Image (cartoon, rainbow, N blue to C red; front, side, top):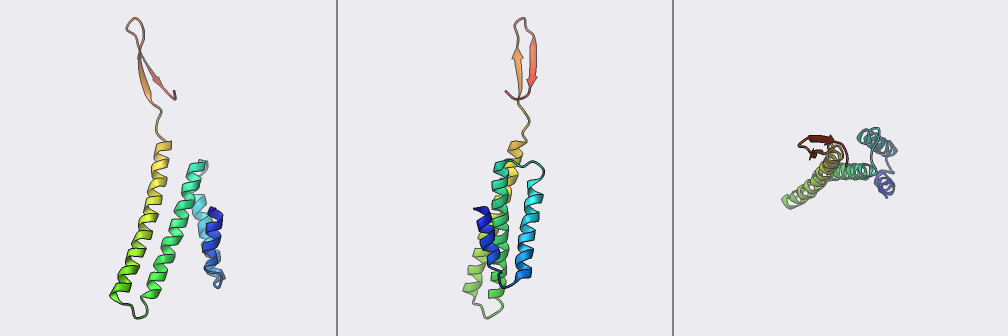
Amino acid sequence: MARLCRGQFSGLYESQPMIQEQIKHRAKVMRQELAGETPTPLELLLIDVVIAAHQDYWHTALLAMQSQRGSSTLRDMEKWERIVSSKEARYLRAVGELARVRRLLNLSAPQLNINMPGGQQVNVNGKI
């Protein structure tokens, strides 16, 4: 599904092959940079969401700038500002979720203190 979404997005720029290739290349590079060496399946899903939100935000920001070149009313400008702000919030939420999942995946193992018979205390580190 993510590949289909990326294809549809780059299809918006079919009439501009240089831009289309740059978008494809940038998405590929972002995916590699965000994935790192050993990403989990959950991280890969969230990386696809981050890339889609990134592309959507910048595409919408570009449309907003283009719409304001002509004679725009204050109402139109406010509408575009709300749309761009919502796209930016979606993008930032996706980045935040990826960071949160990575933080949770890298939590240290719990430490247990066990009282043994005879009053001896043993500390155990590691996965249960």
